[in-house]
Image 1 (cartoon, rainbow, N blue to C red):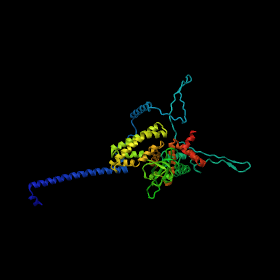
Image 2: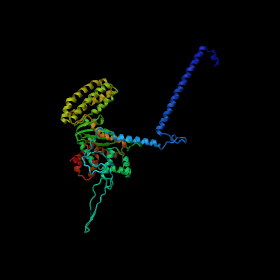
Image 3: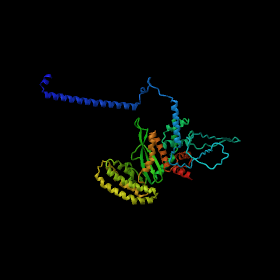
Image 4: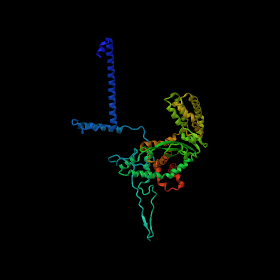
Length: 505
């Protein structure tokens, strides 16, 4: 090695030294980079550990030299704080906290509290009143309803007479119809899982086991089965249905430790404002067959292929949904903003016509005439534009998919022009489904396929309550009290829309 170095020229030695110097510099740079990466990864690991496990207890163990926090303020500081609080209270009391007073509901009971000036009023004359009102409430009132049935014996000892108990929702159960209605409304309307309701009862010192509340819920829902079966029958006879489906997790599953993905199939009648939820473990195309096999009339759906075979039937006019078409073009704003905006503006003009019809409260015949006059030209222009532009788009691009979606369903998208009773989109049924989505975030899943179907019953009736502006608690309490004793020929009287009519009389 030494001999080889001796034979090198001065220039070669300088080049070698320079090369080694550069290599050392690169090694130092790589070491610095690796050191930085190590520090960064270490910090990330520590952060993830804190997120997963929280702060370590020993970090908060007392240091013998640590100064203790003062538990009592100095008298001067306490006095100063009291003055600040007094000023704040005076400010809050005098500050106006509203722009306008909300109108109080006229149907509520009124508790009057008379306040007279202090002192001797014998030499004074009352010249008027100033009335101030506020809306108040009390927590839910729990009470025990005790039935006392007196027994009478004939003087001639010919038997004993006693009155029969009123019809009860749960035979030999302690839950009354009002309590059961509150539990069901709490879970399916206000999205309160049963364990939270149990906590509410506990705050009132009412201890009810979870299994008991679950049993009450199941038995109360089972009482609604005859009314639900009538609703299924009546829904099949409708001439205009909107159909959609939404997922629901169910604990029954073939796979151990996994939840099953079931579906609520939802049928909405816009004319009668009725909604039917029907549970099925599958989303297959065969599922709607029992409901739609003999259906005749207008069928409005999204682009799901399961509905296509029904839409092709001779007695069915298949309507598509403009809201779904619009969503496809909205997705195309990132891909092709110019053409996507053009499509969205044309769709916006179609909705302006619908808004005009609603604001002017037009009859169905007048809506049809308005659509033919103002909406038809927009649809014709948009159809020509899509036919021309779709050739210049990539099929797999989002704008290409949006145009293909509308192009394939153009006749179905135009069918709503036929009749002023028809809707431009499926938004009404999506609004009916929304409570299920909210419920899923709270109670997460149904315990079994049977429980999911029972939930479908109450979702159906609560959706009808909402569409007819019926108080779901009052309707359900009334229905639970009467469903067992009503004549089967009059069972439709228990529909929510008919409950409103009976209470309006």
